[in-house]
Length: 86
Image (cartoon, rainbow, N blue to C red; front, top):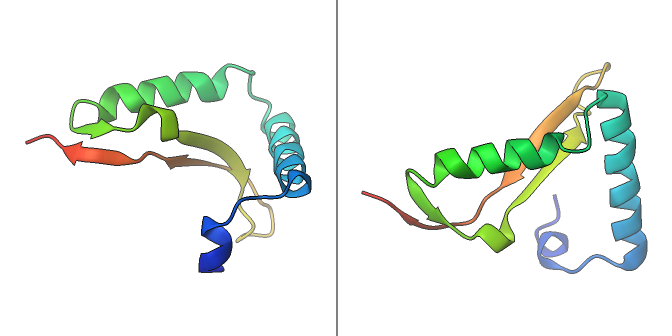
């Protein structure tokens, strides 16, 4: 992964392409539209017991793994942590 690309903003074309890929992955995974929201809510509920998080910055995606010939959906969550509770 290119580190500079990670921090740069996506163009509208790249954003649209990413969204289309996510829609196709969701269709292949046969999940309901509320699936990710439910998982996101549950993940945040559990993590909030152990850490303070940036709710506005949370990103949960269903993506396709390309490591295996028969790729399958994978859940990817980016959850910025403000502070670990101790």
